[in-house]
Amino acid sequence: MKIKPLIICTFLIVPLGIAFYNYEKYLPTFTSSHQALSNEEIQEIIKTKPVTSIEVFKNQRLLLLKSNQDVIRQYPIRLGFNPKGHKHFENDGRTPEGIYSIDWRNSQSAYYKSLHISYPDAKDIAYAKQHNQPTGGDIMIHGSVPKSLLSMPFSSTYMPHKDWTLGCIAVRNVDIDEIWQLVPNHTKIIIYP
Image 1 (cartoon, rainbow, N blue to C red):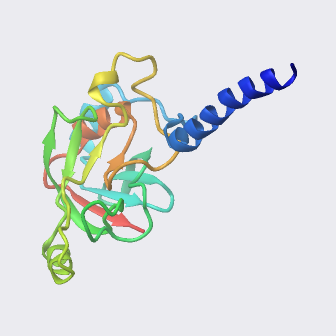
Image 2: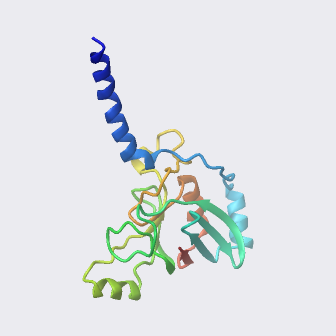
């Protein structure tokens, strides 16, 4: 009779363990975060210290908004599921490294809002062509919660525990709201290893 509870426990624990292994990267991260800017503060920054560049430090999982040499804001980020190294091909799970620009934006993004990074450049295209592979594209800075889940509690501050994108740079939805307003199109973005 003691075997029956053991079998029941096994049937419960094994699927839970498998689910945790497969979905652990989506568990929320509880990081210290900064206070969100008010609309007045955002307008003041735009007037007095407009964002001139974005710097991304992949190893540190950090995105900086800069006005010339001054850091205006910094945000925690998540990257592609295979983050080490430069993106070379479609579906490699890597986030590009190098100098690009923000060339357009999408207010109807699957992940709330997004700013498009100008990857691939001519060098990226030539490398992929040399290896007879597609470069991929649609590399964005975007939110972390899909539009379909925006009604969930804490959706604006949710940040997955691990890297999970296909090569994009993910930030919290509350952070993409600020970035969206502070960063004009054609802003230079430098992505470091």
